[in-house]
Image 1 (cartoon, rainbow, N blue to C red):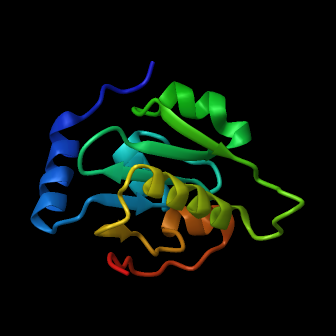
Image 2: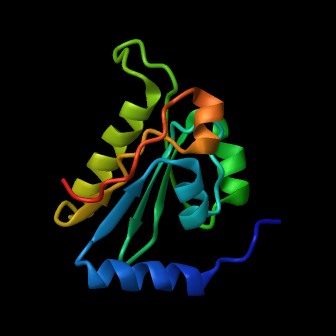
Length: 138
């Protein structure tokens, strides 16, 4: 049984987004994904879109569907392949491509804050990425 949705915490995030005129957050670091969706991604390749208004979207590797469905607060789960013979880039780039398409479809391309972290201490241990500060605007 998943944890109940922490509306107080998520409302606090949305209030901060409103104060900063941010329409959506795009995050990839596992701890940020857990905070916003209640889903702990296995490899740190996944992403989440957390809009100021509306349902968040979890973007997960295909094999993680059952776990994502069981644990995530959001029911909007979009899948991507960990390997695509037509696209040799690492999976996290394909996750961000999916995020961009969703942002376009939902008309959320203005004032988007993107976590540019390559990981966190927890992700570093999983995928060997260096920890970097998060930057929010591009």
